[in-house]
Image (cartoon, rainbow, N blue to C red; front, side, top):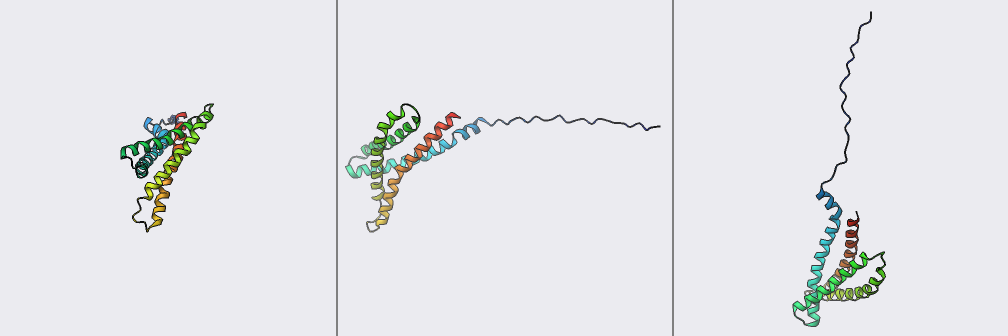
Length: 166
């Protein structure tokens, strides 16, 4: 005689379905716009620095009141930023050629004046004329700030446009 065997089926665990985790809205927005916001903040700080020194350089050269120097400084630096954003936004469109026709010469003039006057203001702050290397270093630093704003604005505009497309 055979011994009967008891076979008991063990309960099977239900297969778990892994769902894609949805990131929170704040995390998604931070990931999408964070780099552009961070770079925009850095450019804003550089613009603030440039504006104060550019206004000082304009006042040194022209002897105008501080308010007029500041108004001219705002005009020059924000012209650089707005023209560069216009160039990036119209890249690859029909209007790019028309925008570039006027923007490029204006950028060259605004960039040249901004660099020269920033260099003058930074260089004039050296403590003593016997330290010529400090004057030259200050002038070079002042001249480089508009270049940094220019390069940063190009990168920022591309990041901002790219983040809106995704």
